[in-house]
Image 1 (cartoon, rainbow over the protein chains, first blue to last red):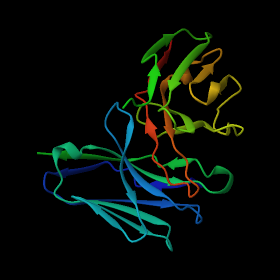
Image 2 (image 1 turned 90 degrees about the vertical axis):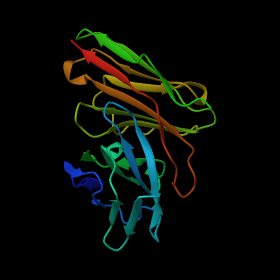
Image 3 (image 1 turned 60 degrees about the horizontal axis):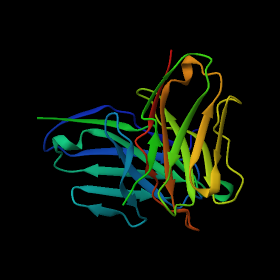
Image 4 (image 1 turned 180 degrees about the vertical axis):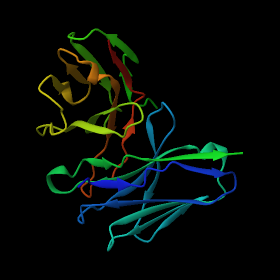
Length: 112
Length: 116
């Protein structure tokens, strides 16, 4: 089983739509969670960290459900510039503490 | 400040040749990672260096791949006897590592390797 599994999409939504991405992780001892964004032919960049209580950054809301080992990202009022691949990321534990495990990514296209 | 840099940005080589890819991490970052990404695919972990600890080589796909990190800073990824399936973008990242494991990885722009 992969460490991180994501709905691969693609998601194609109109501007202004609300879209949600989901992700599950296998290691119940993981402590740190992130969403990264990767634009076409560019390197991944941190979008936001995910905290236990859930957190919001402008139009972006991240949620964590430890019991279900489930992470979500909600994007409200989608913009054309949100078009990218969104990577769900979870840290390792024990001997792999320093590693981050990346999901394969969910592709989003926002159309005018 | 300066981010992670990688060189070369593009490398075209012939099957069977050896290649070296370089990564300069952000100054002060103790952890350095190599990944590769084939077209339309996710990130594939290759190797991880953390301080003076033995590197985690569990992601290296074959013994043709090796990496070193000199002086705790610059890293070189070497691929011997390249094959066409080695063609991909090779990404380097660096980070600080906290006890709780929560840290942001900063990626370089990558080296696009094409093996003819």
